[in-house]
Image 1 (cartoon, protein in one colour):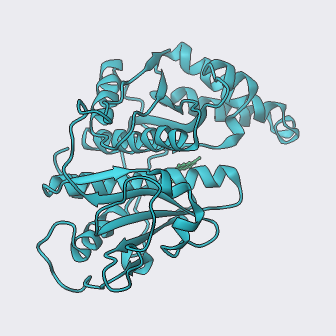
Image 2 (tube, protein in one colour):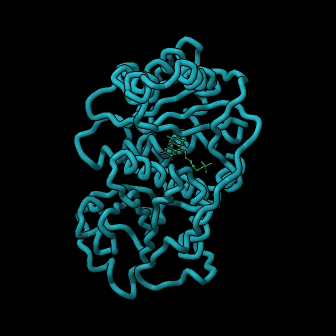
Length: 342
Ligand SMILES: Cc1cc2nc3c(=O)[nH]c(=O)nc-3n(C[C@H](O)[C@H](O)[C@H](O)COP(=O)(O)O)c2cc1C
């Protein structure tokens, strides 16, 4: 990525596309590049489906409209209106559907979902640099039986959303974000006001978070919160018995607010993953070494509460300063892109 900070800040969700066609190779290379930019511990399993030809878009539009058409509201909608809705789908040059694969454990399911959401954000950013606009679309209204059939849905898989992609004439205006300071807690010594040259200092983490908050998030719920643990004064972190590898101080917990509605809950988790991805890209552009992981202890409520985690919140990732180990080392693997071309 050429200008990480500017791209993160300026990227906008685009909902109106021009009819400039897109080449399949452009999409495939975007996906590969986006996956290659993802750096986290674990081996994520995910897949995606591309719909780019007029025929495949027609088939996709049919399945996306099925639930609307069968609903009481849909029966009342004039045919002309339904035609327009369908045309909006078929006229969009490219659609990519992203799916996190099934897994045995919650930790692995989260590894899969976090990866696919972060990679979707990478696709959006890389595309933006090439003049492509995108909409991350996740409305449950499209999830009909025929849609699941079309995507070859298997038990336990999670639909992360689709990216609707095309060129555009005019970018919409951005909506303001809440400064990260207002969503920031420090456990331990608070040195966030001191301009510190150390990459992972509170000052620098906060500085980067203020750029990372320009992440896509549905309904502008900004469902994130940050807990930075230095731990030394209160001993809060030192007293914990971690069920697996303890993070090295200082570390950052990126927290998602949990809505009770399961669809919103997933969307919010996805938005937080996009923010973390932004943060990682920014950190890398400044030459920091950053470790991102979802350790087992984040599923231990007591452990989480010791960091002040509230009810209806969960830790999405633990970030700490550390040598970035290359994918080829054990425990790291490059996410292989499984693309089904339709
Ligand atoms: C997980 C996720 C799901 C989203 N789903 C939808 C959607 O179904 N429909 C829609 O219009 N926008 C959707 N969006 C886009 C957001 O509404 C958009 O990111 C937000 O308004 C902020 O605008 P920006 O992306 O231009 O910064 C989604 C975004 C995310 C991250």
